[in-house]
Length: 47
Image (cartoon, rainbow, N blue to C red; front, side):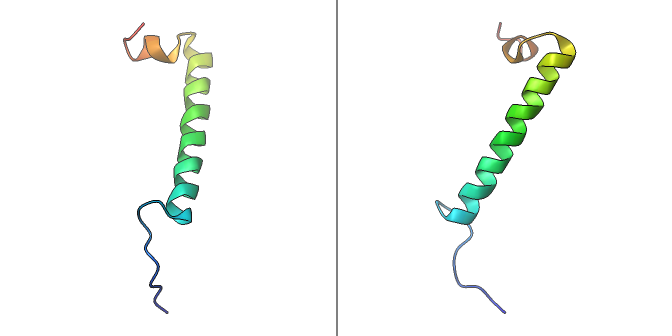
């Protein structure tokens, strides 16, 4: 079965995955901050 709806651009499928990956990045960033004691900006050399 082939699906004719696009899976790129501003469609619900792409926005759902974008939100999931953003939440994962936020949690990973907070976890790294808690483990290292440095802010995310300091880890990147910005602060």
